[in-house]
Every structure is written in C-alpha cells, then in structure tokens.
Image (cartoon, rainbow, N blue to C red):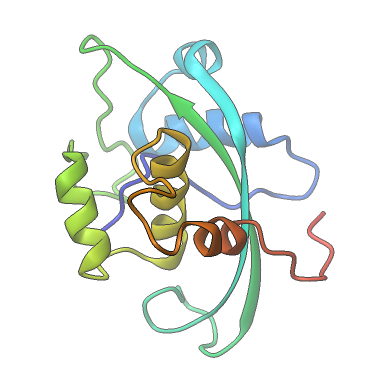
Amino acid sequence: MSIDLVGGSLPAGELPINCLIRESHEESGLSSEVVSKLAKPVGTISYVTSSDTKTTSGGESGLIRAEVQFIYDMKVGPEIVPMPYDMEASSIDLFTIDEIKNALDDGEFTPANACLMLDFFIRHGLTTFENEENYTQIISRLHRSSGMQTF
C-alpha cells in the first residue's frame, strides 16, 4: 500500500521543490502551477533501514540505507483531482484516517510510507503523547542521524 501521492529520488543538485513539481506531474498529472501554489514544505524525516524484497526495486537485499525525506503538504479542494499519469500507480484513492491506521497496524506500508504517515499524524495532532505510549521514541526514530553525509 502506498499512501503518499507522489515521491521520487532527489538527484544531486536538484532542489526538493523542483523534484516535487516534476514528480507530481509525472505521477499524478498535477500541473507545476498547482503544485507551486499549494505545496507547503513542512519538514524532513530521516531514518535508517535495510533493503529487502519489499523495498528493493532491482537492487540487492540486505543493504543499509540512510534516507532523508523532504515533506510537503498540499491541501486541495474537490476541483483538483489527481489521476495516475505515468502508470506507476493503477489508481489514486482517498483513505480515511481509520483506514490508514489499520493499514499501519497491519504492516501494509513500505518503511518510507509508514514513516511519512507517522510524521503526518504527529504534525496534525492525531498521534500524541496522551494516546501513544511510544510517542517520544517514534519522534526520535523519525529524526535519526545515520552519521553519513546525505548531500
């Protein structure tokens, strides 16, 4: 299950917003004008994971991967309907918060998407110290330093 609308590798020298604009058009048909106007940078997450069959696309399994995700939120009205554009996705669906929580509990997310959703839940007050016993540990793990240079 993939919940983020668009995402992609950030080539060396490309600004995160330019990557977002390019990937938004490639994956969901959204125009550069819409993305430039509505996308708001809200932070980063960084984590260390290992590649496996679920996260490896043509690469070797068992490798340590340090990742940094640049996160943008984009609130859109009903007049903006993203559609699969480059066939990476067969559909773009809307999920309720409960559906996303259930999918997280069931392990249906890739590590990157699970981290993105946890960050979203924390930033929007859906996951708090009061309702999640591992709250501080989750926040710490979403902002982990690998000791490796990322740029």
